[in-house]
Length: 287
Image (tube, rainbow, N blue to C red; front, top):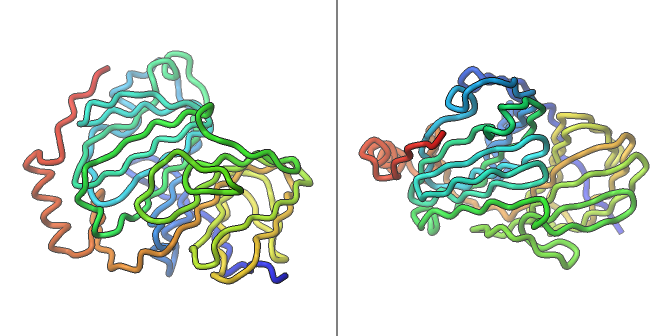
């Protein structure tokens, strides 16, 4: 049986986001999105002890029209939003938020992490929402490591966050068909990933090295696959953690500005006005 082939391997670029340096494999040169995935940011920096919570992380800001999703790998992330949610998700967990018609939230290290200091590593990626769902009620799910279903196979553990994989269904609610996985693997692991051929599929490595379709990928590389029949056959050359983002293309025009992702420039301008008028909620953070 034919295996799915690699379209491109893209090395993440270091970018400056409001004074924060992080690794960004998507968007990349000549590649605005891999529909429905719009952006991937990888943060991996230690948290210094003794800082005040209000001085670190990202303060209150609005979103509309897509889902910003955060996979936490080390440390934790505290989320507060204008719906009244205030939760801390630790390593192995996921912050899943569908912005819908508008929500205001903040993302910071917890007080506990700031007291002791320590590693903090997470990936945030943006998933587009089809036009028919963009103006629905916002939705937030804090998903712990313990509540995330997992599959163990050949020196690997695969966590299923969303969609269905090998008969296991992920808890997160998506607005277009997707399969979102996070994997921890040991050297020598051999995996055969079965994903729908019409789904746009990518793998991003946090660390380690893997080989697939005769090509090698290392830490902070993103592998983008061709849409074709067949399984993704990969071999782990060095202990690796990676994520798999696979989704059915939405196929709609995308117009975005900052934290808003809509279909037209007119809708983006409306989002800006609505945010300025407080229509996306008000967040008074608790410290």
